[in-house]
Amino acid sequence: MASGNLTIDLRALVANYLALAAMTAGETAAVVKADGYGLGAALVAQTLAKAGARRFFVATAEEGATLRQALGNTPEINVFSGHMAGDTALIRDAYLVPMLNSPAQVHRHQEALPGHPFGVQLDSGMHRLGVQPADWPALRDAARNATLLMSHLACADEPDHPQNAAQLAAFHALTADSQSPKSLAATGGTLLGRPYHFDLIRPGIGLYGGLPFAQAQPVVRLSLPVIQIRTAVPGAKVGYAASYTAPGPRQIATLSSGYADGLIRAMSSRATLWHGDTPCPLVGRVSMDLLTVDVTDCAEPPEVLDILGPHQTVDQLAEAAGTIGYEILTSLGPRYRRELIQ
Image (cartoon, rainbow, N blue to C red):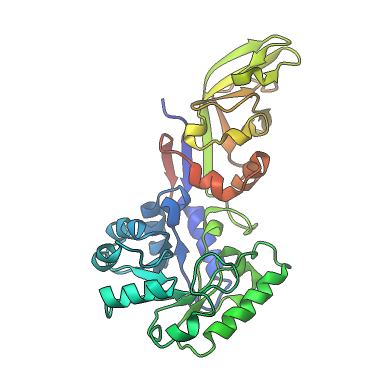
């Protein structure tokens, strides 16, 4: 028995891409790192390529090489981590475009692969990845042929945060003398409006139905099978550490899924599952392979329950677990039976 059915709506994925693309006058790339945010990078990228995407972003050269096999030779595949030590053969053979992040990476790339395309990531104030402003003047000449100058916003999901405007100004200052195409906006930056778009937007989470793109269509539904249902008498303890005590007679369903499938322990006694329109609280601790859920209010014994679906988005589930939708999506395990809507 699979741990559940993970339904991926490729029509919704494309609709989200096209909706974000319609917001900009420039090009729209697609971020498919972390195996397409847990949904399968090859599947996601092939689908979006058919919808018009010509440029993709991954986290590492290894991800890029795998994606190249799925996409063929035409699309451009960019690597956020740049040109790391040991990446030269992958970058060359898979024809990847590293986003260089430091003077050391610029020198490594130009010495190892002279003439091979590259972009540059600039640190406009997030202090995570990117060439620091103090190092940039000495690298400008070496980077004059960059395919892209990019940076990343730290607070784009908070439109009124002052760091957005500060980073926009810093990016303008860093790139003012360059003729290379420019990119600052991921999903959140795209929603901030045209001043943040430059030549290329590169949405990630918004493609997959996540915030801050509130108008996104949901892309995933996760339905979990019920193994058995038992009656818990008043005072009965459920699950590890006896963390849940039945307040009265309760019908407790045991489901085939757990933290090994990406349903993190922080959901314990906090998440809700659904049987049609009936909410069913998760009770007790999340186990490695099992969940226990109170189905007392169901009109009939359920065979499956939805933990993601029409009544609960990835962000709503994430909020219940005290995390973010990114973690929910990228944690989805390999044991689910995957079904496609196309």
